[in-house]
Length: 383
Image (cartoon, rainbow, N blue to C red):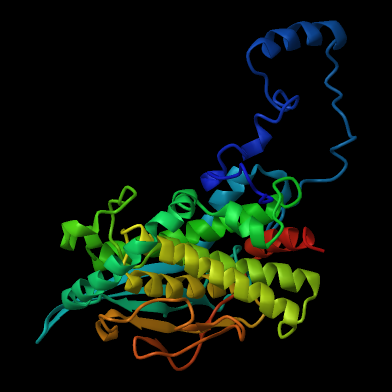
């Protein structure tokens, strides 16, 4: 049984916010229903005469200011706004649509503002915008050729329908089958992964909107998807983006916190399993008939970049991130996706292909004190 069974639907922390619904704990912090009337009578019975003395038992020191300051005092829903603001304020998205001899070409880029300020969060930063990842839309000829692969995957539907349905929502149950994730033991880890998913969603949806790739069943009615097809662009695959980003971040968090040597057999096994799981979840979306293999490949490249970016923003270990371009126009129509074409799971390194190229020089990324606070809290749960 998965360690997170029954935790599906973690999206947005519903059901987890403030621990509402925890049996015997519902009234903590707020009155609900009949408890409000009970509290009125209860106060009248014990408070006595008003003297305004208060208590110094929990007010012995001034609330911390600055960053991370009082992060630990706030509800996780409030912290989510702070983390998202921190991340999105340093990101920008552009679309370059040009016309060449072969027709319209769409290229979209996600940019990061590389700061040079010495007081992040306290004074306005100075710096410059630099590319993090660029994506070029595949041609319609490539997408139509990919339909042959989509059709071939339909043979697996009977075997994988259970997985496909269980993986529609964020896949905490599946991640928890590889890494022992528990709601009560790892609340800050789950909070961190929720932010990773939100960041991945921001990136993938902007690329989907810019590149405007039709779903497979829009090219052929014979595809007949077995699940509801999302009403947004097909490339990059959101499931591939999110699962690869989570796999990258979760591996780094767990192994670094536990002091596991990156080149050890234990680390290689964990990274390989997490990446294989991410690839299988992505492939299942093609089996279901809602994605092409090229979508999964693009999503893997975006997810790995988002994962690397998030790790650096949270830890500042190296201070830089590799810059990649995924060129859909260079992607062969017959190219399948297995998960190992552009990433070596055992070695933990990205692989260059004609359609996945690395830009010379890395992107300078500064550590966020807010995100570092959350990372440190999450890391302590694995020690």
